[in-house]
Length: 483
Image (spheres, rainbow, N blue to C red):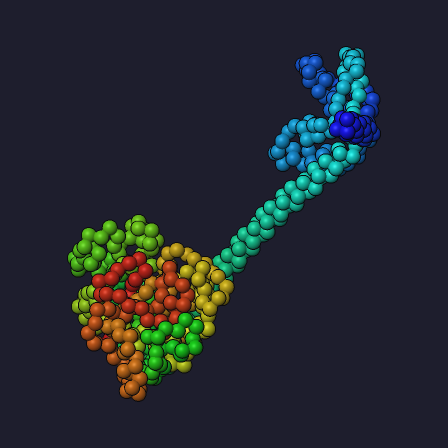
């Protein structure tokens, strides 16, 4: 009997809970009667009309009775449609999301030929629906914030790109001004020389002429007598100090070298000049003898160099090719030409015995002053232009000795063997005379950097080296004339 009583008691408690639950649910749900209309076209069927009127009625109930609908869903739908997103109506989305919270029951339907009308009951759990709409609003805000971040990032990237183009344009304009200044400077020097010569003739005095006349104009392609500059000798400090940015161990110890007067090629040997040598001598370059697919005739892109590049520096020439050219030119002209010694090259590059900075332009060099890879400036300075090619040998302003492109454009062969310990031996001797390092070895010296190397390799003291047969699209040479 006791067990039966307990069971009856439990059933009564369960029934009471069900009644309370049903009561709470009944209180939470509210039913609203609304009439909606929709102006339709003749092409729409009954299903479409009913769907549209249903949307109108539910939207009205959600906005007027629940609240939050227009702020969260209607605005959301407008944004998504304008950005190419979903095209379903906002009410359809709400019905999909709020299934179980909103119930729709049509009572009466009719049409007047223009509008389709429906009277329906909409039962809504207002509290649950409002909470769901709040969740939707929060999710949509996160969605909008993410989109805003993307738009902001794109705008910043666009501004950075515009700034990069602006800087490129400024650099190009600065380079153009330098070219103009250089041309005016050359013109003025020529005019001053002409006036000085004319004044000497008028006075009946002998006019001084250097051992070799140095043309003030760009050498014509194939010219046998290359333009040279007289270099007044002196004692200079060769190498770089240990605190120079990017200093290399073989650039020291610094030591004193006495350089005698000499003549240095004003420009790097050009394509046109080297072509003259090949055509007149009947010789072949080492690349041609080896049947390389690319020789001195080809540009950096592997294609045959166009006529517009005849005044660019010749490249893909080995040390052996450069020496052969010097011998041919000496025989052809009756003059004596050779490659510069390493000491002559550095002295000429610096522009004098007093220049101790990394470049003859000072502590930095820009792509408006030399042709190197502007993406890799010196000592974290501002980036410049990467031309991806050589430039004409008379580009940029000359240094104090009137020499062009001692920094960049192409690496230049020197006569010396390379020896990493050579400077230490020179240091021990005190002031040493300019002389070629003739000690035996496997490598010859290269100086000056090139169009595809970072700025640090263009430093006056930087030493590179390779085998005498080495030849690539960034290696050339210039001459020394011996009176």
